[in-house]
Length: 357
Image 1 (cartoon, rainbow, N blue to C red):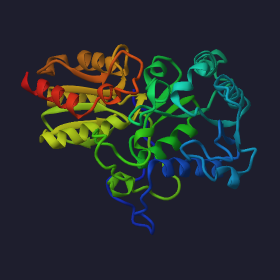
Image 2: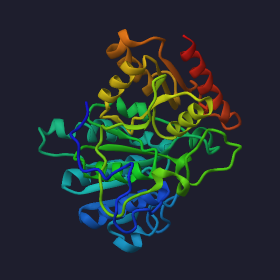
Image 3: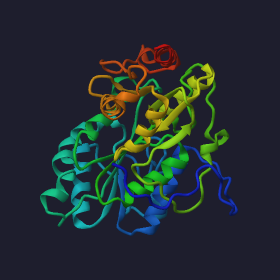
């Protein structure tokens, strides 16, 4: 299920050229990726609610309209169905659109266009037309956004044949994955975990926020580089258990394992579809234990698919039942956000349970 590798800048060692130690937060890395692609390809356009003059609600598109012009970076009405529909038409016409949905919670009016049109266009036209659009959208909780600004709908899109789903967890990955997504000739849903736009998150909401500039993965090379879709990132290596996570949960899981002294094999999936099943299988067969962590609701969440795949491929290597730590099957609460959010206590309890078995 992995795609062929493409050019990827070194991740663990910074390049030798001047400026190699530039440290960016995720917002800056995303902005830089968009700027590079607008510069490289005249058919690339960026549009959405408030992305032009204002620069986006999180400032990910700040300065792009001023630099590239109002025909390349422009505002749209508050009409998610129209935004996605226009993007599909642009892609079929030969453009490479990058629409932004201001919050993932508002993407639902565009589902018909994404599922019935964008995901099917290549197939139904026998590859005469394609839909090379990249739909960017902030998602996830941890910011007291309540039920309409905190949802994690990624599993809806992983269910749809023809769509690719990408979720970065670091500035380095955000830039490289976004460039790969924009250059991909199939539609890509690019979810950006808004809780970690400005820094990694340990899960302790009452502790000071660590800025990205103190984190190794904030070193972002200048210029163009790609990270291949379908390639997981090894966050830590260990023999006690495998942790499968993505987005904000990568950092929470890592912090809990570090505090508990657990030597875990933590895999940041980076892309749900295509999925790096080979890396998952190799890790679980080595550790014999698997824990899956995500913010989305439990029932039919992507963790259920991961659990099924691990059981199918690694059954005779498992030494304990697979554990899932997820959101609950309720609307995202505002007053009880930290009970819903898969934080350190719940992840720690799951680790204790899986290592006890």
